[in-house]
Image 1 (cartoon, rainbow, N blue to C red):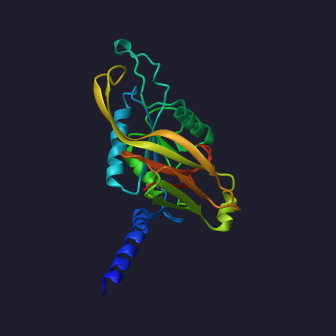
Image 2 (cartoon, rainbow, N blue to C red; image 1 turned 135 degrees about the horizontal axis):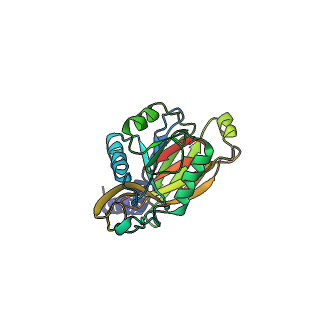
Image 3 (cartoon, one colour; image 1 turned 135 degrees about the vertical axis):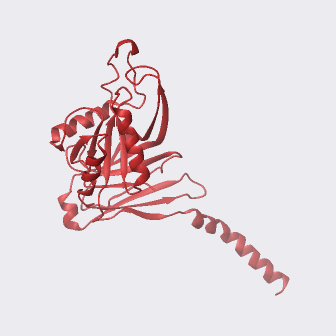
Length: 262
């Protein structure tokens, strides 16, 4: 090989290097939920102001650790924030939001099986069954008897060199299934993985408490429209955070499909 040919090969290699880097940084495309898979979702309505809630919060953490297929979410309600507990006073839960109280009340209206109502700790399994949030046996039984996913949900995360990472969410199903679910909302729920809080007032005064999968934002991505593609681009979860896609009309219908972001 002469000097000119070698130089040409080196030049080609360096010209192709940016494209190669882009290819390497375009990361995985994964399906996180498939049609026919078992749906395993627990929504825990909880509060730092409730003395019965720490046991339920710990249970959710244990279930998440034991079952990597489980989708577990904590929704911190706000109706405990103004309750005064004698000399301990009241405690405002820093994770509480009115929209989470509204979600629990919507579940009450929807007519859940089990133990519906507005109370804490309350676990709602697959948007169908309400249970005491610390009742391990009943929660596990409800998960075993749950329905199947009605949609395929896939994710693809890309990290191009010159842009911020993006996550594409794609949903698909048979045409008849999409038609049956037409108009159903598709939502993205973002959560913090864990948080430790020193509670200085209220029923749990002086407790240092750990929470798991604490929902802090809910955004509707769109609705199922059978005649259009179901693909959405969002920012991937930040470090120490996660997100879940839900296919459900608020809390007024069962959860038809759900998937954890990669």
